[in-house]
Length: 251
Image 1 (tube, rainbow, N blue to C red):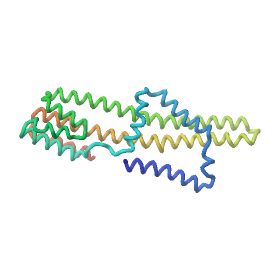
Image 2: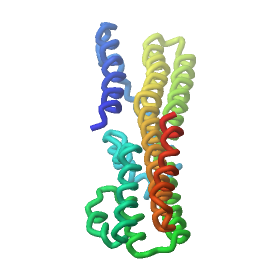
Image 3: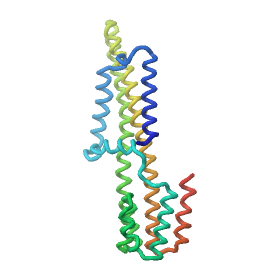
Image 4: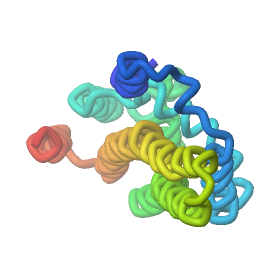
């Protein structure tokens, strides 16, 4: 469980619930079926219309990624590991690390170093890994854009609901009993839209973007390290080039 994601979600929804309780009106006053239909139904419909079925099918998986810790090693540990592999390969040959590679939990690292074991030429190795990285990036961006779309759609549907409620209210000014429900639609749709957009979609969009950036940096380091090893560069060069990445990453 990613503690910051869980903490953020629990914090914002908990504070809203606390404010409702302290307000004295109770939760019932904040539940309005027409508002739910407009915001939740409308946002869902817009999202379905904007994305293909295969992307929509990965929505739950994307939520899981946001709720769990990022599965990449710290950059300094990854660089140190690549240097250890490079040293071992330089001393004992590439086949000496074949068994060790199969024990790696990072699939991108495993694929990159399996290409080394297969004696793939440096430029071919780099090209294959860059293609894989590009496809990975496209998948990640699709999921990130889905949460961005949900946030924007929820806000827009909240505004639409507000207009629907105001029109209904103005059309029934002569009937005091109709003004209250119409005003509830106008106000609660805005509230629902803001909550979905900020306290759900916004959190997951930002968290997935952050995890995407970390994974891309990790993969780029793996590509560079594997390419240098395949090119039979000296251990000193490997250490220097990979070490030079650290300041820019830490900044």
